[in-house]
Length: 396
Image: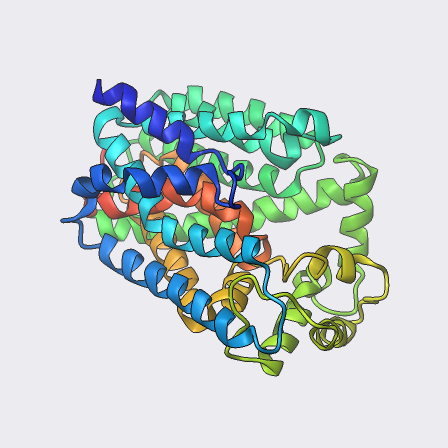
């Protein structure tokens, strides 16, 4: 019976559609189930900092919006959505841990299935639904299914999934899968030749270095393929435009970082959850983007970035805007937990593909992705991180 309840809960945790009151299904389900799932995390030492910072960020977001309410318009729906998503971070983590204790690796499969159900409406609303949600949900499910199986099975699955992203103009997802495939291939080579392995901590450090090299090569390959037009004309145009910019590649690709820095210098304590920007803030952001050589007078800034609150295309910056330094600290803690979880997983020669994919998505979106993308992936990495065993002896 508990296994059935765990599957249902994890399906709900994967659904980010909003209920009445602008609170996501996942956040509501996680918070409501916390009296049950609390038992799974209350004695896990890595859970405490996540809980503390998430609650502090939520309270800070509300207090800041109350203070800013004398000068700014505050959207109550945006405020509820942001605060709920922040305080639900430890609740969704607890739900994943509770589910994993009953389902094992199938917990990742159930959570991915919830994400897939949540993404199905994209089939009607998007021209490229595979790129914008369905693809990653299916990929997480497939990688959960092949978790623990022979490496050749994992490599075949990764190759097939990479091909699907190759033809759907998805540079980031393709790059992530190439990185994971390279890591699995390296580990298969080490196991095949029965190389003498160092202790777990040294092995994790060595494999992290290998992963960095594989990542750099994978990014170079994906950018070269994109520039050649193999990922489609749109991806080719974006890659060539970004590579020819006057700033470095990252700043050219994401000029929102210029807006973020300008807003931070303008108001370093942030704004508050649900606070809507004024024309003064929009102009500050435009000036920051213009300093990078980007022309902000194209409608994108007014419609996407500031048309319905603040959207700086960075989870770190968006949460700083809403919850000031406690929110930024929460995001940095998430980065730290994600990296530590991935490194600990490199303590032997059996990488967990679904965990690495979720971890790479989290790291990307903390830096240069919308906050609303992150909550669906956080239970994978935070849940795995808080219950992960210390580095152990390597296994072939």
